[in-house]
View 1 (cartoon, helix red, strand yellow):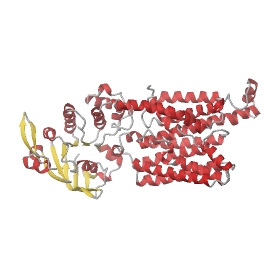
View 2 (cartoon, each protein chain N blue to C red):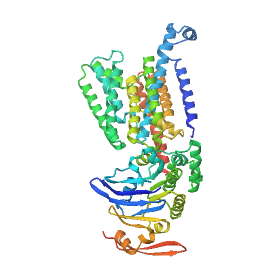
View 3 (cartoon, rainbow over the protein chains, first blue to last red):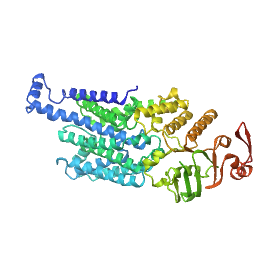
View 4 (tube, one colour):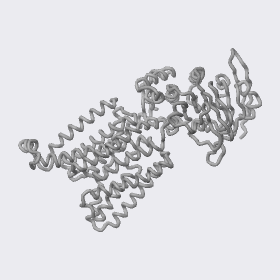
Length: 331
Length: 252
């Protein structure tokens, strides 16, 4: 299939709007037509609150979290020129996860925005280390090595948090959070996501064109006037904001950041700069579909969103990888 | 534009790869030749300011290349590295259009189509580069460079992966570019082609300039033996220089 970036953007945006509207129809409370009329005419009524304060923010947050993951994945793959790169590869997501786990283990699980704040702080610390490192060593191999090291360190510290967890309830709470969910998310959560997407879009728009030249390798990009250290820092900053906020808002949701850019490439958009925004839309649609399944399919009711995205994403990714490998074989 | 290297030394990993090189390149087709490890690629990278020089400087019409802003340098100097990386499966025309930054996007694509057609890639211009052969990809990257408007072209072994007919075709195209006033510096291993096409040859050995000048002066028996351990016969037929090489035993 070969779609232009514009057509793909429009199709994905339309799909997202339809899905967001469609998923408003479903939830724990059955809503006959009479209640819908109430919800629309009297937003302050109980049906109104269910639709506008519970279902809509959940749908919008699901879409925005997916968009952040998709955009972050596209940026990381473009920077590292590696189709296997994803938001977690440099350790930012792990840092956010560790921050959230620390907040829960010190008893701040129920304090408003504490888990999100700690998660964001974890992401910021890791991103700061990466930024300092990139200023000195802009080569992608060095960056990947550091990222692998930071991810392993955060993983070890996460294991330590589990190890020292004061009670099984706390452990279960951390574990549940790491599986990802957009249940009970609010307009404030959606607002955080919009700020993150806005900042990252601005940074990407300003310097992301450098990713095109990076397609031809570091040396060629530098010879074409691209400041590699600056490009690396901007992309890490944008991807860090996105993946850190995504983990802060919804916990860990796997595979979307990896699969969304691949989906966009399979649709025919291969330019690493033009890929950024369709990947965001594709990621949003993916998380919306997954969250819809969590809510609508009875058997998946107890499955967490992050688990479901991985369960769907892994085979989907395997199919895309197989198709890509087949096209490379013809080379 | 005239490019000058003034006592340029480059050290890599503790090894002196270029040792106080001083030479100049006026508009024309220049070939850098020399055995593996002689410093050809390093010299091209040093000229493009992709490597810091330890001593000396490179100047373009008197301006220090290392002190130019990256953007200004890119306006004047185009470079193709030896490694031909294309990370994503972009259409050939989109890769070639990356070289025409000075034009509006539609004009850049038009320019890219023209350069691709001139390099025999008209029919595959809209195909993804992953579906092209190695030789076709090399020509796409050449089209990318030629779609620009640089004054200096630095091409590191651009003929690798090309068949003999396309090797000659590309050299003819580069010769045209040089005739239009560009300074084209190409690293090559093919000495007979160098003898035929080069206006000037710089022969490197162990980080030094072993000889430089027109091919008829450089490719004399003594220099070929000293630098490559080869002997050769240089003749002129129909106004063209021909170099016939006879290999001596390799000194392993």
